[in-house]
Amino acid sequence: MTETTAIGSEVELAAEQLTVGYGARAVLSALDLQIRGGAITAIIGPNGCGKSTLLRTLGRLLKPSDGTVLLRGDAITSLRIRDIAQRMALLPQGPMAPEGMTVQELVARGRHPHQSFFRQWSAEDADKVRAALELTGLTDLADRDVATLSGGQRQRAWIAMTLAQDTDLLLLDEPTTYLDISHSVEVLDLVERLHADLGRTVVMVIHDLNLAARYADELVVMHDGQVAAQGPPDEVITEQLLADVFDLEARLIVDPVAGSPLVIPVGQRYAQGSDRAGTGRNQAQKLG
Amino acid sequence: MTAGVVVLRAGSLSTRLRIRPMVVSGLLLACAAGLFLVAICAGSTWVEPAKVIDVLGGGGTRAGRFQILELRMPRVAIGALAGAALGLSGALMQSAVRNPLASPDLLGITSGASVGAVGVYVLGWRVFGAPLSVSLPLAALIGGLAAAALVFVISRGGPVLGLRLILVGIGVGAALRGLIYAMLVIGGEFDVQKAQVWMTGDLSTESARIPLLLAAIALTLALGGGLSRSLSSLQLGQEAAHGIGVPVERLMLATLACSVLAASVAVCAAGPLGFVALVSPQVARLMAGGHRPPLICSAACGALLVLAADLVARTLFEGFVSVGVLTALVGGPVLIGLLLSGMRSRT
Image (cartoon, rainbow over all chains, first blue to last red; front, side, top):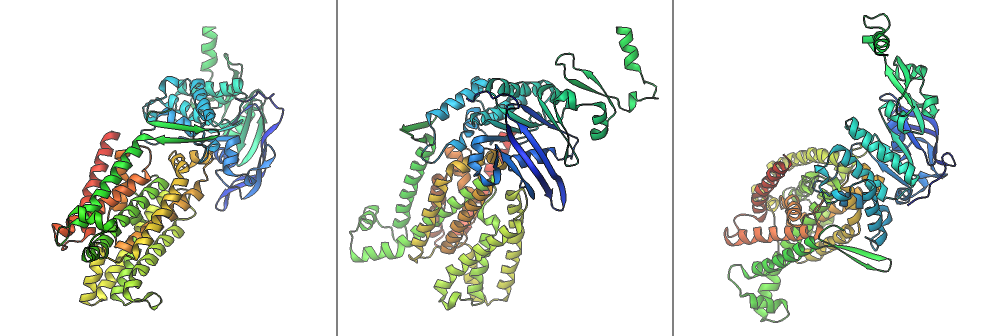
């Protein structure tokens, strides 16, 4: 499909002085951001920080009141929506397939930007859909009604649709919402494969800090409509940042499986001065 | 590819043909043609179908030609075409807002057209000083379009265009119906009676309305056919459709404008025929399958519904009951049945 590009080789998507507001209240104010090609970038931040708004503006679902979004240097407002869709796929949060639609029919919709009245179903369309089904492990479920799938399978089917779209860049708005932990991992493993095997650039909004740190090459931390920090997870995630941005007292340890930072929240129950303070350390000593 | 789909390719050109909708629309169109013929045969006296076919083919006696071409055929044709236009209008609107309960009636078109018509009958409105026979359809057309425009303007600017349209449409429709009752109270008894007859569906014999209906149907089919792929993709939801390259806002506005135009022309030609635009697309979709109402099947269903209602009104009720009353009598229960079966399949 696409050739693998070296991480950090090029700026795939950029925001310049981006300001977005619902009415008078600005959700993003004069935000600058650069997203590297070939990497998985996760946008994290507390509720209401503007991370979904940022992703939706990058995908041209929202019009900025000021500033520009550049797709490989082209202002997206100067491109036709169909041309954008040939270069950048966008999966909204919690998408719903029409009643009775099969996995195959859903994935085939991803070919929309490559089709026209005179080119409704080319051999290439069929190939891309077959490849997308195979890569997402949905070939055997192709004729199943999307509504009958598990949450993880359903999200994989939607990602397969964006895969059939055959773009270098993929924007995912909270791909793991409503999914339990095993289905979240199932979906993120797929995202990782898109990146590793196909060299796709992925930008996703994700809530879970530990999963973000584990799967992303780069984190963008949003706070009050601004980028508070950007960089590799082990550099960005610090106890200070968690206190400043998330208003959370937490300890950091190294994820014993992935080696990425693992956030351990303290919370009132185990806070300094409470009855249970130090419980974890004592238990660890006993077990150790 | 998916079962029931045939893909044809020639060089870089390719097309997809879905078998079931094609077969169903063929059958429905054949039924409509048959009922069209029967509707012309039936009347104060029964005319043999062979004779009608002979006249439609250019033969027949002078008296026979007058009876069929001047008296019976225009009324039946206006009914069939208005039904088809309403079916198309409903199919487009339901596809655009992705809601099976959307119909041009809900956007205030029927009420707006009725305000125009009642104004002509009761308050003596004349469009550009034209006589009543010309002012009536014009006032209905203007009223319908104006009401729809009002609903659009009020609904603009929000993120969920479809839902806002329906809610605002219900409000505007209610206000306009209040206006209609107020006008009926003011009017003289004779005028009010005529206005009320119009409001329950009025299939006249004025053949001048036929080309207008044909033009509206042709325009709607051309636009609907051209936008077919985008409308299918829109069924994934506005945001997902945007993501795969559908210009969502433009598509919805163009589709709704076309739907409004087709409905307004139908109402102006035949009076408000309740429930046709709401029910025909859903019946068509049940028969033809798919994820949105199929256009040609919806048109055929609309034509069939109005033809049947008019036939029953003219023969069984000898014209005492208007066609619009019958479409509502048939359409209401059909709609409830659809809703109940839909609810059952979801639980």
